[in-house]
Amino acid sequence: MTMRKANGRKRFRTKFTQHQRERMFEFAERVGWKLQKQDEELISEFCSKIGVEKRVFKVWLHNKKKNSTLANRDQPTADILPECIIHKILCYLSYGEASRMRILSKTWLQAWLTHPNLEFIFRYSDEAIKIVDKIMERYRDGKIPIEKLGFTKNSHPVFCEGEVSPQIDKWLGIALQNGVKYPELMYSGFRSSSIFKFLETNLLRELVLTGCDLMHLSVSTSHVVNCHSLRKLSLCRVHLDENMLQTLLTSCPLIVNLVIDQCLRLKKLELRNLQKIRSLTIKIIMYQRILVKIQAPNLEHLSYSGYSLKDLDIVEYENLKSLKISCRKISDGFIEHLISRTHFLESLILVKILKRFDIHRSKSLRVLKIKNCENIGVIDAPNLVSIEYKGEYVPRLTFAKESNQLKHSHIILDCRYSSLDAWWFCELRSFLSNSIYWSQVSLNISKCNEISRKYFQLHGRVATRQVDVLDVNIESTRDCPAFVDALLWSCHPRRLNLSSTVKMITCFTGHLMHIKNSSHSTSHGSKPPFSELKEVKAYTWNNQPVKIRNGELAIRDLRGRKEIYFLLDW
Image (tube, one colour):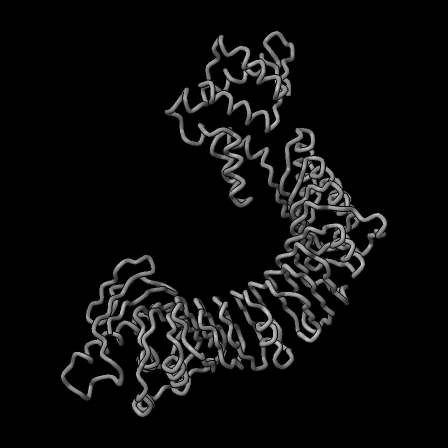
């Protein structure tokens, strides 16, 4: 950079690297932003180490002295922080949040212009390409370090290959020169030969590829590179075959986290001799058949999503700690066999399994999540800490023994596509009364059929179970009082969270007050067919009390949907 003096001669300004700026700031803080004669030898030695002339360092110190915390303690907070500290702050923020911080001051703007994490999300256009190209050239010319680089674009593969791919190769080359460690490419149809150039540097920590095409690359096994720095490899909708995948895995023997997500060209997936791998995620689209064989003795976290488990063969998994399976078609006893062979399994997530399964004698299991599994058998997990069930229907599952360590139990019923009637509430009441203690029950309801109160009187012999929290999300119902009766007949919540229209909330409040007043009444004919409700208190979602006058909420100016919660004392 050059500046003109009054006499017309050019004056050159020295450019410092990030490392030099950090070292100079640390040294200036140590000497109190003052240069003493007795420190001349120390200053000369310091300047020699960082490669900066002593004269230049003294000028920098004089210019920056007014910004130091010791020299000026009354400055605004945005200006007293050094650029190296601002860089660290920006690294903890998302890219969008970090970009907004540049308006705070010139120091923050300068830190933003040299931010080591770059993320580009744009649509195809000449203007967008020019902007990205200008930024990348500025980083190249200024030798600004790059740690993280992300490109996201969803354009037609023809445009990518013909117009954008050469530019991305150029940008990747710049990032490579500037020491990038975490590249992320989310580019539909993108073809590049830079992948193995990245691996050859032996600097990468993570490599995330989405929508890229590696089928055109031809890499023989005799020219395999060795990248011992890579720890995470993620391939999502990447076009590659078995040979290319094995080449990548052979090149990166120390991978800890591997993700293979919807790679359609793969017909066989063999993961052998991966001694360091700890986490493995495999996602296969519906009806795609891939033969999967896993041999990873140190595997701790496995997530498998596909149509059938018959094609999955796991040779070693004794150290498995967490397991997630989403699969409709499984063989008899597969889940039971899988669980029985590991003695350290702590977390188990089961999704969309249609066949009946049991969980037998799993003493190590702490967390259990079940989603859209209709045929659940016996659960024998005596040390369970957390359990969560989510589905459309009231589950039919039994527990061999309730865990003494159970702290969180949540059942979520998505009934938006079902019509609820008295029989449905009877099933819910029976399940809650005969199962373990469920601390939270969540109901998503779109409509409710006509409910007969006489049904509750005939089937009310089982004691109503109390729950800590009941979440109700409902659009509307024909008979609001009958719906509230059915809800409170099923369970007695200490807290009732309600998300609905203002009309429904007003109706809920009025009927809750009616139940409370009826339970206090001396007339036996007016009492509801469940336990007494002693007190009702209403609050907005931000914990502001809402007054109830004459059985109605004191809310007159509400529009649309509203969220409110009630504290009920039984």
